[in-house]
Length: 151
Image: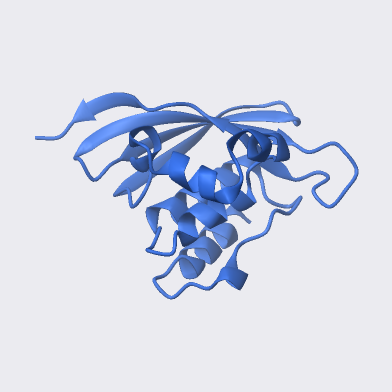
């Protein structure tokens, strides 16, 4: 199932993108897949900020209250701490914990500045009744930690 979401994300994040192609949260999407959808989107961000809009779709409602609305979130992603994620060269993910309600995903980024960074994604499964019930959503992303510089 994870492969299906990765393939779907790759297809969606080609250079020909449209607003109605946003992947929507679903209870079938695991926490690591949520992060990878967001990372593929940010890796393929375009002049219309489609990747940032896709990432916003999986932001937890509390996260949206703290970082939104979308134009403010977009400006935050373009700050030095998070712009590393935009159009990155490569990423790797690893689930650190998942207790069925909360999850942590470690992310290693190879950035365009020829440096490697790590981030920690925090996710929560929505428990409240409503359209997002049982969906994994991003509650926060740490700042970057420099791992290595290329030659």
